[in-house]
Each structure stands twice: as structure tokens, then as C-alpha cells.
Amino acid sequence: MEKPLFSRRAIEFLLFATRSIFAWGIGLLWVIPFLGVFMSAVRPQEELLHGWWRFSPFTFTLENFSHAWTHSTASIAQGLWNSLLVAVAATLLAVFLGALAAYGFLRAKRAVAMWVFLGVVLLLALPQQMAAVPLFQGLAALDLINSYVGLIFVHAAWGLPWITMFLRNFFTTIPMELEEAARIDGASRTYTFFRILLPISLPGLASAAALQFNWVWNDFFFALILIYSPDMLLVTQRIPLLRGQYYVDWGLLSAAAILAMSVPILVFLLLQRYYVRGLVGWSVEK
Image (tube, rainbow, N blue to C red; front, side, top):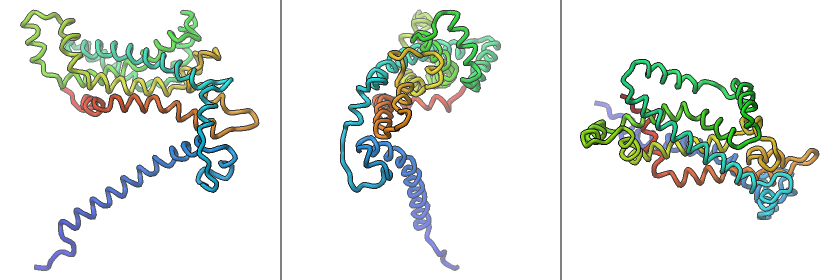
């Protein structure tokens, strides 16, 4: 019998090496744009005229971050605070209402609940641009234009469909016996939901909160059509204002972009221990 040209171990090693090289290549493609932004942020403008990849000369400086932080026209410090207020409130409101709706859809016995849930899921396909005009008109009638309250309600409502679907799928992973035992002990559905279901659903809630916070923080469209007072502008609205009419300071823009992206990165790092565990809710369904 003729011996194979390559042994099984050699083939497995070649496959592993190929996958590793491919993964490192994809990772490098993702890192290069951020490296360009970072190198532009920590160098003076005159060293960037011929490309950030030229390192002769190289002068490390934090002046771009300082100027972006305290910019006279579009202070990134104020923008971060404004965005934080909107993102935190919209995240807490959407996750709380989404958890209530998800539990209701999961335990509803009537067939009409499934059709209502299907309608909620279909709302995920609605683009923001289609709702811009009726949203603006409705908020204008309520005198909520140029108000954080209106923007928070819009973001919470926009995130509610996917959070409801996400948490409903996650709740299916929790044993029904826990609720049955609580009911035997005389606990109401409200008590069971707040004192039993929510505490053990922390991974799913943290995952939903991290994603919702990230999407609200990075939003530009809704903020653009609803907020226009200079002192109320969010961080995503302030970054374009750093671009001059006749002169573009790429170092200043890069520093502002890094400051803006640092907050959602920090949120993901803080919720990392729950995030992966919570994502199992997407793939489990009764």
C-alpha cells in the first residue's frame, strides 16, 4: 500500500497555519485604519502632509487632544457629556421596556401575541430615513424638537424591537421551573419578574445594554434632525464642525474621533464578562 504524501498531522498543521495567517491578515486590515487615525492624532500637522506612514521626522504630541477637548467652537468635552446623557438614558429606558415586552411575549398564551411579536420583528427592517419626517412632525407637535427628552424617546423606541426579540430569545434559556416554584410559593408575576428573572438575566441585559449604548452613541442621523442648539450638540455632531472651510486639521479631527470612540470601547471592556454569555440568547429559541 502506497504511503500518503502528507501525514494527517502535517495536513492538520497546514490547515491551522492557513487559518491563523488568514485571521491575522483580516485583523491587520482592521488595525491599519485605526493605526492611521492614531498616528495622525499624536503628530503635528506638518508631519502629515506626505502621509501618516512616513515616520521621518516623528514628533509625539498630545496637543491635538488638548485642542479638541477645549475647542472654542465644538468642544469635544461638552459633546461627550451631552452624548453620555442621551446614551445612558436611552439605553436604560429601552432595555427596561424591552425586558417587560419580551417577558410578556414569552409568557403570553394567546396566538395573537405571536402575530404582534412578528410585527415587532418586522420593524427591524425599517430604515431611519423613512421615519424621519413623521418623527419630526410628531415631536414638533409635542414641542420636543431640540430637546434631549425627544431624542431619548426616539432612540429608546428605535431600539425597542431588537431588544425585545433579543431578550425574548434569552429568556427562553431560563428554566421554567424557577417561575413555577415561585408561583407555588405565592409569588406574583411582577415579583417573579423583578426579583427572580431579571437578576439571573444579567448577561442578556448587559449584552443588550452594550449594543444599544454603542448604537445610540454613534448615531448621527437622529441627532442631526432633532438637535441644533450649539451647546446641546452631541459628540458625533461636533466632529464635523472641527473641519475648517479652507483648512482641514487632520490631527485635530483624528484626536476628536479617538476621544469619541473611547467611551463605547470602555463600555464594552466593562461589560466584557457578560457580553459573550449574553449573546447565546440570539441562537436559542423554544
